[in-house]
Image 1: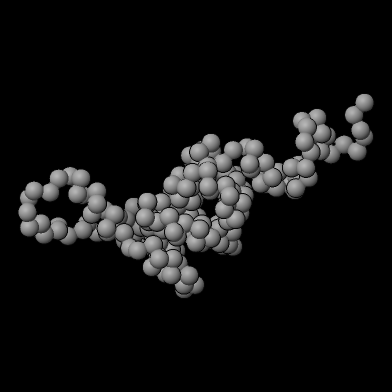
Image 2 (image 1 turned 180 degrees about the horizontal axis):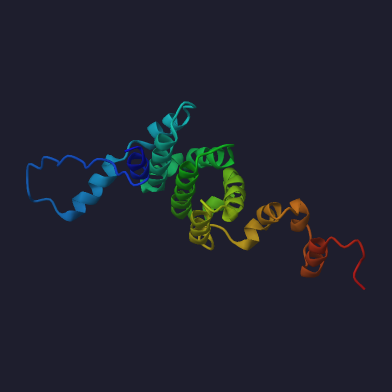
Length: 197
């Protein structure tokens, strides 16, 4: 019976919602979409709850999911910077749970899509992008990181505005962003002390 419990945990779904009491049957299916948005907790409340240090990973992963959904909505634009800061802290933290990291990655993707090119100018984006790129080699989070970067590339960031971050991940530091020409970048990448002839 112990084995059965352990195998059912990852597949556990939240209990079904009780049916709502509709007073009229004139509601269209469009109203159902609005109900889904109303079911989400306020983003400001989610931000406050995420500040609590004594939180189980399952709760934190769920709150990060709500954070991404709420901050990516049209009326969530005022909390996006704070949401990105929470995501930055989550991705940069030590000993984070895999499920929490996945939720943070997905939330950053949702918020990034909502922000568009404005995302690249956010202070927290540098850390989020660096940590996301580091997660590409993770067996457990690599596919989520790859999907998020693919969704945001071109829409929110480009190679041109992110070269410094990429060079940091590759271990080249900020030296790779200083050269202006391709020839000089190749020289830096090879770390050759001899000048070209």
